[in-house]
Image 1 (cartoon, rainbow, N blue to C red):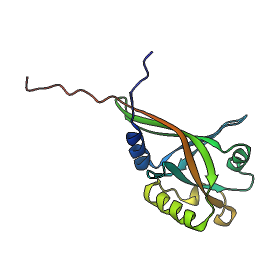
Image 2 (image 1 turned 180 degrees about the vertical axis):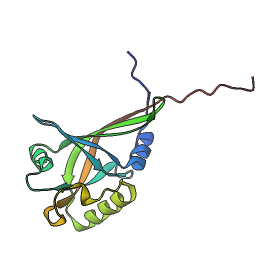
Image 3 (image 1 turned 60 degrees about the vertical axis):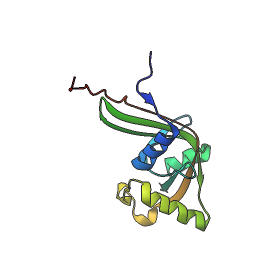
Image 4 (image 1 turned 30 degrees about the vertical axis):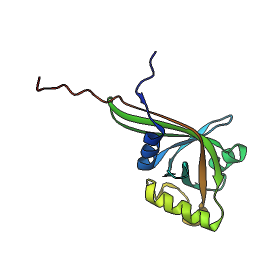
Length: 154
């Protein structure tokens, strides 16, 4: 069976990640866990910047304590003949030094899909935001084949 769509180049994948700014981050383990996230793609360093927010008893924190290996799914679907899907495998690591945090925040602000803290049930002082870098080990992407337009002048 043929794989649907057309394989994307690394440059096409990078441009899509830079433009999209959100996806689903999945953690492995005995009970896999996925959640929607915003991210900024850094084309120069080939990495994704995320700001994860933790609460008391956070499932994200528990999964990160078990393993920092993650999978990011980023897609856009506008119709059966107009879609793109990118898969990223890599490792999350916290960004802690001041210059790196500033750099991460700038990338995130420019390329991420912004979401407010109102998505959490806790008050702002109960939330613990932390910057993370997703170091990309492998990425792949597919997109719908370009539609052939009939030549109506013939």
